[in-house]
Length: 492
Ligand code: FAD
Ligand code: 2HG
Ligand code: ZN
Image: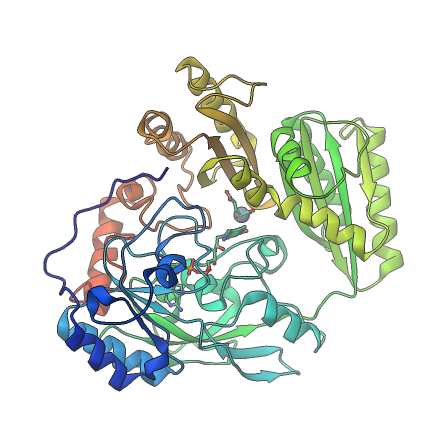
């Protein structure tokens, strides 16, 4: 089922033995060391399965050792030893990454942050949260909600992903339109470098112009420069009035028109503008126990969310928007959520798409930034190309390719092109790669809007970064990780 184009194992990395396992048991609590018999431990290889396979079941490593430290000091001791011994390490958070970055390629040690999950401090006046990197995003959102605040990011994987993983991937998600990137909301980081040095940059300051802002390098570094152990993040006030509407839209052109109107009418309270096509909708209605809030089927659907502090004011504005869109024929139908249950059902419809596609088959994912006017063209082009190659027949869900669909954070120019196939295989992959990347580059887009590079896009980085930029990225890697032990084979 899986794709097997792995770079060869670098022989410069040490192969683990029981001597290493015994050493690790001295520097971290023995119960946090999960080692199989292959390296002198006792763990059943099945216990390591979940650490070796990714969420998509597309990438799989063969690690025989998982370490789950509880403190920054332990992380430091582990990395120091691994550097000295040239042992390769993969930092792992909630393992929800979609580009093969979070699992080993070969026998790298998995360094899981899941035991580092404490809130360190919370300032109710500034809203600054300082916590361990292994805290689960949803748990943090609940924690700050009790204090009247909201995490500045949210994504479908919130129940499993860690804040450290979010920072390491610079995750975007559905609150990006309102609260912007983690490059803005992360105020400080505690990072352990491969040689064991602890970089304590866990600032809670909003303003700090004392030279180079080193933490920015780790945001989006995908575990290749250091292991994030602590995060300081600014949490905004939780909006007291939230409204959601789902719209049925006859064309992609009208999805754009509706966005223009939404910004014009509801600019200051608009907090999300998401879209998906009819194929996504069919998959989600089939696989989740949800009913469409709209009577008929439409080529496109839009979810509009407003967040403000005056319910009556926001209700009025969103209703006026909906009326205008219907009157002008920009949308053909629209449903306004009447209560919190309906709001969360509408969101489940959008957020349930990746899982529903995963249940349909092997899902190829291309997460791209392209200018909004041409954003959906790539979905149509890919469908045509697959049809021409006799791999896909629209309206038939059998065949090597079952579905070609598009959805995403259109308010951020971010498309998720997904292709669902029977299995991952070269004749299908060869249709998209490098075609999709060439397509994106020709529009000066990005081949990774929010999921990162990982293993999947490592060889395609040149489509979004110049040779000079890649060369400086490599030089930065050399500075922080001179022996390249951290997340090898990934990113650069
Ligand atoms: P992992 O998957 O464990 O790791 C991801 C990368 O970060 C790896 O390279 C890993 O080595 C590194 N890493 C993890 N923790 C650390 C650490 N503490 N220190 C250093 N490096 C570390 N992504 C979006 O951007 N927007 C979305 O809307 C979105 N929705 C998703 C919905 C679903 C259903 C799924 C399955 C995934 C989604 N993702 C989305 C992708 C994924 O959830 C994010 O990339 C997330 O930020 C990964 O967090 P994680 O803790 O699972 O990290
Ligand atoms: C989303 O927006 C996630 O739902 C996942 O980023 C996208 O699976 C995908 O392609
Ligand atoms: Zn997304």
